[in-house]
Image 1 (cartoon, one colour):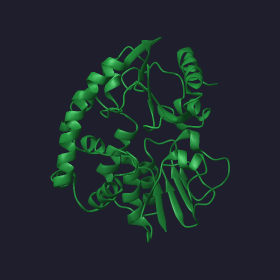
Image 2 (cartoon, helix red, strand yellow):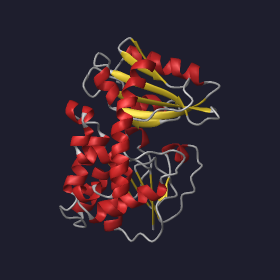
Image 3 (spheres, one colour):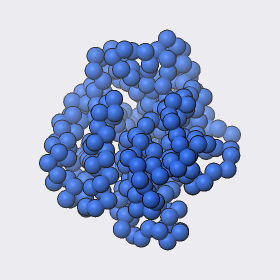
Image 4 (cartoon, one colour):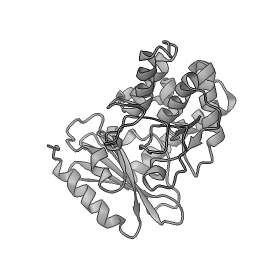
Length: 299
């Protein structure tokens, strides 16, 4: 069996859990949701999909994104939960296949993936080990596959304090802390506020800055939602859109996952993303923003 998941903290923890309960005999396949949505992922019988849209070719599927819920029957589990890891954990604990060993890990995965953070956790991730570790997980052309695999191995066998003392991880954490300081300046410089929505557009930058994705919520507390726009690569053929409800301002009524599902993307109620063609991106973005500005709850 093979684990197929995405390279974020939730996906990594999904892999940790699945290694404990299933007979995994192949390397992890790391992909993005868009690979499934566009039919570009080669999913095989025996594959276990986690934290990704459903594929009828897989043998087991676990997810928690409302936009991904299939209308057909499937093997595995789906729930509107804080994380896909939580869905897997609860499923296998009911079967008696998992004990309480990973309680702390899954609780922190819930917090991170659901963005249920405090202001201190946002501004000082260095004081919160799991949050800081999650920020070291980046996807730049899938160059970090060895690192993601290493994290899966470490989280299966070591506690968080030991993991943070690993030389590579310690170095990455130090880099994250420095990047966050620079990222805050970029957010302030490239963000405009329209009708209580913060719109950050990085398309005029040669290199998209990385940093704490939750900073925008505390920097612009009057906004109930944030939109981040950037090109997916130097070729500038596709535009990536990320939208999130402000975790410190609960006035957003729009289901983000459902909204972006109309444009080929997805997510859950509080956050999501999609990929647009550069040639039509401005038109699509205007439509997306108009729905956000209306801020109507689905009936």
